[in-house]
Length: 109
Picture 1 (tube, rainbow, N blue to C red):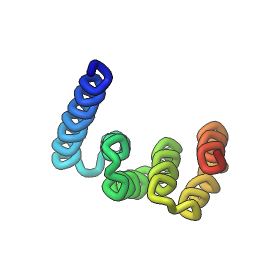
Picture 2 (spheres, helix red, strand yellow):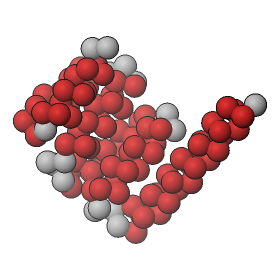
Picture 3 (tube, rainbow, N blue to C red):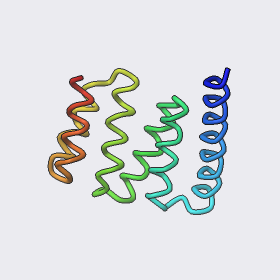
């Protein structure tokens, strides 16, 4: 019972966090870091397509943000698009070797 309560409270906290970031992004749609956080929240809620949309917008604004590419690679992987995830890996190799290595390990685990 305790585990299901903890799970529900975590889901509620994630949902609340996403709602907060949605409001922030609505007011400041050009804030790449908030878009990444929104994308991560959507990912945690298993809203992978929304996650991809937010992360792509973030990359359009700030194209050298390795965290955005890493999270985008994870989101593509979650929907079964290994090819797009590998594209993010190839970009990450040039931006941040650590994120690239972690994504590579997630792709091939």
